[in-house]
Length: 390
Image (cartoon, rainbow, N blue to C red):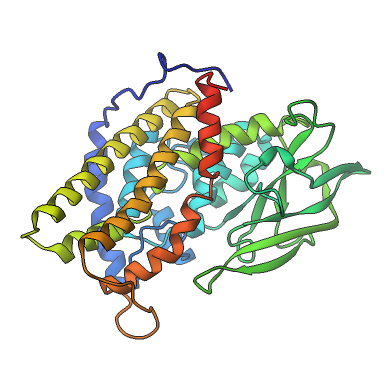
């Protein structure tokens, strides 16, 4: 990662293109129609709703793979236009998780580092809402220490043999592919060497997918086990040994988006509705603080999107957005409990959309926000190293 400093760390004010506001209106109209037709329950946590049907409808509008070249099924629009679409989807609580990973990071990774054959075979399918991806980074007993990868890929005749395991591979039981980070050589002193990325076919490569049930009682996470799994040579993504450089560039897309501070937006909106038009002084001050933080985070996240559009690598800025965003998401829930006399209610029975039930679900989801995409400790380590403080 290039060294930054407090002097050159910046979040230049982004300017949304004129087309973005027209696009915003179009997305809102689409979402209003979709919510009426499909009756999905709003939840602004991007991982809460898996609907291949919704993803295909979104793809038909050209809103998956928006920034990609047209020859790969994309629309050749800007990162800022894509940002406009994604924040509207999250604010509305649309069921976006089916295509989210493929659109946000797996597709861009293949576009940048994949072979022409990989791009031609995979990207049009993602852009049409027909191909979904899982992330294959984390491993059992490793936490967020990405450099501690033990899953090993060894060369064999005609390809690679993989042994090891990956965890927190969201929706691997229903998705089509996973990009797995594996050790192919010596780690070196910084442990960043000898890593490579591979395209794994979750349906046909013979991996074992074991469910991990979360605190909500839902099966979203999985453990994916590689036991003498052999894949063809052409599944290597980029260069052998370039995995660390590739995966860290991928994480800038994962850590800086609107999902890093909008996961509890539906709670914030419900809180405003619950307080009503005549808040007391304490409630008004609390809402004001949350609103100002939300607007600041949005401006910072938009700035990172603009830097990505300009071809820059804002790794430190992305880590800052994620760290501050995760704190904001936690504080939305804690503020709601502090300014309204309400206890999170059981989700079984009754109206699942009432405020106590929404709050109960948010409390259970909340711990995951600071884990996915890198823990708070990892983010602060990246920031400190990037600023030359360690």
